[in-house]
Length: 203
Length: 203
DNA sequence: TATAAGAAGCGACCGTTGGTCGCTATAAGG
DNA sequence: CCTTATAGCGACCAACGGTCGCTTCTTATA
Image (cartoon, rainbow over all chains, first blue to last red; front, top):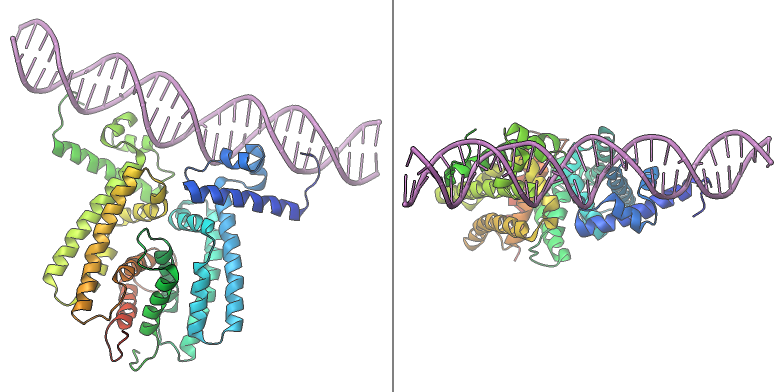
C-alpha cells in the first residue's frame, strides 16, 4: 500500500463507498451493535484507525449510507414524477421504488429510525434534512393530486408518513401474508380507495 | 441492606419492575446504546452485578418490558372487544389505546423493532410470541368485521400491521402535522373508507 | 444455643468495544 | 536533495457488558 500519495476527492469518495458497502453487509448480517469497527477494518484491508480518516465515528457510516440511498431514491422519484402524469400511478410507482431499496440498506434504515434521536446533533440534522427532502417530494405528489381533484382533501404530510411506514410494515415482517408485490398492491388499494373521490366526497 | 433473606417471588417481581422502570426512563432519555448497566445499577441503589441476579442480560430488560406492555395492551383490547360491538368503533378504540402506551415504552418498542432480529434466539422467540399474540387479537377484530359484512374482504394480517405501523408513524415524528388525536382520527378515516363497504364492493 | 445451608449482594476482574495519538513511510514541489 | 504534507497504522485508553468467588446475613434444624 503506497503511502503519502494525496488521494483525489473521487478516490476518497470511492474509499468511503467501499467502507460503507462492507459495513452495510455486516450490519445487515449481525446488526449494528454486533458489527465492530475492527471487523470492518479487516474486511476493508486496512488498520482500524485508518477507518477514522474516512469517517469520524461508527455512526457516521450509517448516516452517510442513509444520505446516499435517500439521494438515489429522490432521483428516482423525480424521474417517476416527470414520466407519469397520473397522481395515482405516480404514487404506486414511488412506493414500488421504495420497496426495492436494496436489502442491506434496510437494516440501517430501520436502525436509524430507532436510534436517530440519540445521535450527535450534527448527524441528527443531516438525517433530518435527508428525510424531509424525501418526504417532501412525495408529499408534493399528493398535494398535486389534491389540487387536481383526484385525491380528496387530506393531511398530505401525515399521508406521506403513513405510506412510507406501510412499506416498512410490508417489507419488515416475519409473517408475510403474501408476496411483497401483492401486499404492496393491497396496501395502495386500501389507501387509494380511502383517499380518492369515488362517489362520496369527504370535505 | 439486609442480605440473605429469601425474597418472595412477588418481591423478586417487584425488584424487576423497579429495575425495568429505571432502565426505561434512561433509555427513553439517552437511547439504548448510551444507557449502561452501571448507570442503571446506581439509580437502582445496587451493585452492577446484582442487576444480573434479576436479568440475565441488558437485552433481557427490554424484552421483559416489551412483554409487560404487550400483556397489558392485550388486556385492554379484550376489554374493548367485550364492551364494543361495532367493529369500526372497536378498531378506533384499539388504536387509541395503542396511542396511549406510556412514552418511556415507546423508545424500547422502536428499538426492539430495529434490533430484535439480532437478539439471542430465546429473546427473539419471546418477542415473537408476544407480538403475534397482540397482532392476532387485533386481526380477530378485523376478521369479525369482514364476516359481519362491515369490512370488505381484505388481508386482515396485512391490515393489522398497517394499522399498528401507522400509529408509530403518528407518534414518532419530529414534524407532526396536527395533534396526535387528530392525526389518529384522520388515519382511521383513511383506512376505514378504504376498507368499508360504502357503495362499491371490491370482491 | 450452636451450626449448617443457602441466598442477596458486591468488588475485582475479563475480553471487547469505539475512539485517539504520535510515529513511520512515502510522494510531490522547489 | 531536502522539505513538507499526508496515508496508514500500532499501541493505547476509558468504558462497556458480563462473570466469579467471596462476604454477610437469615432461616431451619439439632
